[in-house]
Length: 265
Image (tube, rainbow, N blue to C red; front, side, top):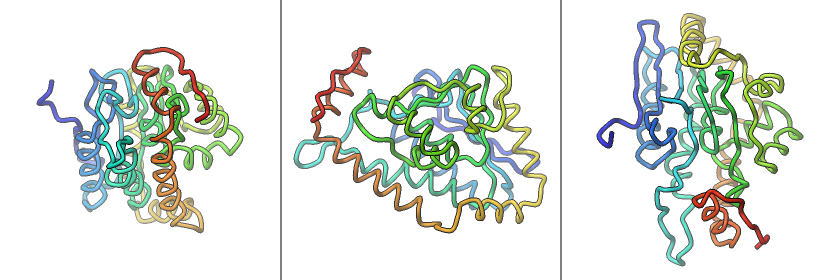
């Protein structure tokens, strides 16, 4: 499995670029290698005039479980974990590319989407979710704030009150409730998320893509730089968390599969 590509890309005759996170044995958890491959795939799809719509999904039983905590973090000169370099160089550029490309992006959430998995799903224009899928902003369980635009896009989709509920309590949101809240656009039977997402992406690819690009711009609002400023704020805050005892305890508790004992420092 080690020589398997971490991201798969397929092109359909209708002009859909289907991008699949491909670490199913690790629930498609993000490593820098996966992130770089995904950034390249998204960038190529955005720049290719033959691509009229993009589909994002995960292989196996998960969309993405978020950052792979087993993957060691680099350290800064003062010995604290480096929580910002990957955000600024890999993960945030993915989100910006998805939001800026003049093409519709469909997320097919086939299972759990947690942490960075939520960030990726929420950056899509439309989301199809399997009935047993769920969303989990697990950042608070690690003693950090959400990153890669997840809170920004969540608040846009469901409003600040529900966004605060998910971000501050870190509770799992079932796909059925996500549909009621307006977080996702469509539910489908388990095992059919990719097929339903591809059908939706194909429908969009066959539509007036110039007009769809304009609709995407209009829906982004009057402040196109707002997302970029938000991503930079998140990266700065993430690094501030790196030196806290709560972050160290949150990571240790996650690895030991127990409840964290936070001290507020």
